Length: 375
Image (spheres, rainbow, N blue to C red):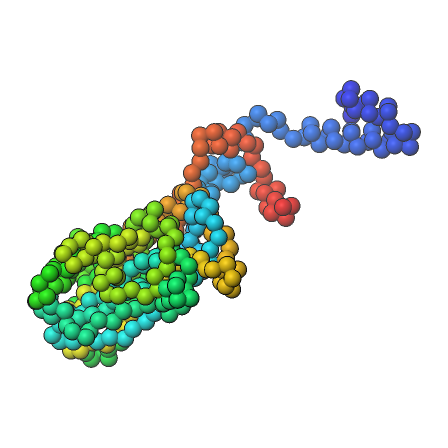
């Protein structure tokens, strides 16, 4: 095998004891190079009928990848941001409540992640005309976030995740009743000033929304949940002073529209509403609201010294998960599946990258199998 001019020069400069070894090495290298196809030579057509791209993979391989649904509180991955937002302590908690749906009144459940408090929802009863049933209001607040910033709670917080799970625990013979639910990006109608019809617009607004779903109480015998989604990106990512526990009116200010009684406050995530119609037989229900937050604490506190950098991700990843959750907002999913189910993300390839991949030579499948072992 003839050596190149440069190789001959290197052999000549080598010590006498190394000349023979170096010459043999160059000859072996030249022999292997001659056996390899030229880089500009077209790869032979595939006999399998599939078009192959870079590294011998099918052309459609790698066109999409899967991303866990990080907006579901059941998913342990903290929700990433597009830009770096500093350090915080992610926390996900829950609050549950057992209630009854009677044969006379509506039972209303309203929930949202306010971002700046541990209060996540309210359950109360409303008469047929829309009058609030006195003494029926129950506020759901995550215990670990129930204290305000001036009472030993977090200094500030922002919304991250939200889900609402409702289960009908009534025995089989009596289980039933009409249930209407809505996971809304818009605010619900406001409260009327007339106490006799105070909540009638809220109930009517949920029931007549084109996005609402109506089911039977028997459909809720297993834990299923609705997952909240961001509705205001700026407010969703904004840290605000932590208020701890809210009153019912303060909670409604995050969910309902402006009116005589309500002065709207900032709302980072969607509002989830359930309307339980009066049933033929009394129904036993249980609701669990889970919510995730990014929290910040005083520098001298243990949580304050455990804060970590908020994770970041590519805009297409964050947007794809947000869009997926919003597009399926009114689909009930089993609690165990919400965080496991992955969102399929489309592969985004620039024209320049596509041209480079098309020009790369094909690698035999056997060689491709060895690549992970070499990394």
